[in-house]
Amino acid sequence: MAERAAPRVTILGLGRMGTAIAHAFLDAGYRTTVWNRTAAKAGVLTAEGAVYADDVTAAVEAGPLLIVPLLDPGAVRQALEPAAPCLAGRTVVGLANGTPQQARDLAAWAAGHGADYLDGAMMALPHTVATPEAFFFYSGPERAYAEHRTALEVMATGHFVGADPAAAEVHSLAVLGTGYAALTGFLHAAALLETFGTDPETLAPAAAAWLRGMAAFLPELAREAGAGRYGDAASTIDLNRPAVDALIAVSGERGVDPALHRPLKELLDRRSADGHGDDSFAAVYELLRVR
Image (cartoon, rainbow, N blue to C red):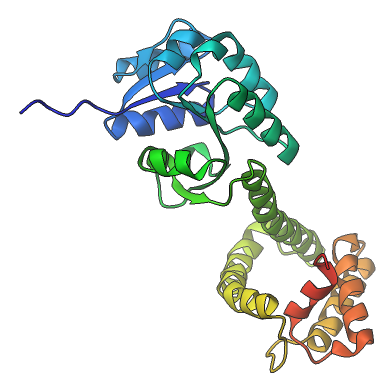
């Protein structure tokens, strides 16, 4: 019986993320074609078995699945333009950071050349590619996602979030927002404790332990927000208001800018003034959501 041919994939762009992705596909046994504007970046990969394409057209023609981890959607389109006549019947997976409208525009351009376009948002760093820590959001034609899901999950766990090409970008930005809030809160805390002689390295383990508890609380917060029911709460609006007030006051007294926490104070005060002081902290959601 003849051996089954190795599945094929093409990686266009060999920055840090592109290189990590190419390594993952090689390790998974894929016939991996790579292309980069600077050919020297492919040296290590070709030594490990990757096929280097001399131009982008040859790279596109090498397989049905094109992974494009470039800087922005404009760079993705610019890289693919010379090979546009060869895109028909292939699936382009754009892994650039961009706006929702840029994702839609790139999808329309690819469709105009007969290609499926999946917009991918990478929730990963190069060293986490192909590990349980990484996950990617995808949006676009669900049929294309289903067809290539096995290959896509070589890079990271995949989450399909809708047919609108913009959906992956929006989901990525939303998740990034939770992280930015936590990281900025930590930096504010470090600045505050520095005024008491505690260095950031000492704070980090305690903050990490607290954030793990916060992460464990997220499903309950989500349940309350999703149901719109905030009664019988362990952590209420009025319970948290004094803590936020004190955090702002102490920060000001120590010369640390408390601006980060003022928006939360305003939301808690508004919710309490509306008669919802005994509701769960999750009730802040009602002031943020679109009605």
